[in-house]
Length: 156
Image 1 (cartoon, helix red, strand yellow):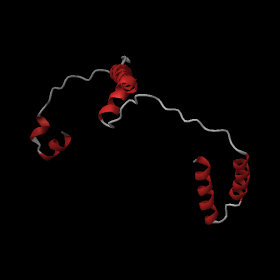
Image 2 (tube, rainbow, N blue to C red):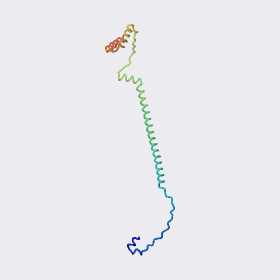
Image 3 (tube, one colour):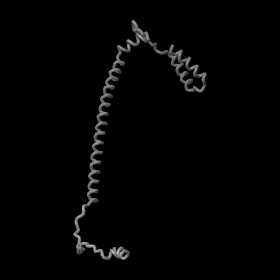
């Protein structure tokens, strides 16, 4: 304003009526609203809420997994019962006999024949000891042929 008065003289006569300055008063310290503290408290509440929600989600997922596993267990138990019933059916003698008659064309014999083996003669005992000696020296292939032929003679 002073600069304007120096440049233009008419401004010197201009009197501006400004209100008088008030004496400087000491400002009373008002308690400020603590935005930082409010933000920290809100952040803690949000974190606690997220923790609770995540725990509930995990509990729900575990419950779903448990229900699925229980249904799988029941399904496997039913399958086990079916398979054990099939195994019992497959082991039954009547079924085996029926399969032998139809597929393999086997028949029941009219009578059972028993084979009687006569008591061994001393000559056969001598052949056995000789056979045992030959068996102990099985390094040559020709010996194996002789052993087989002797065994077939002893059996017949």
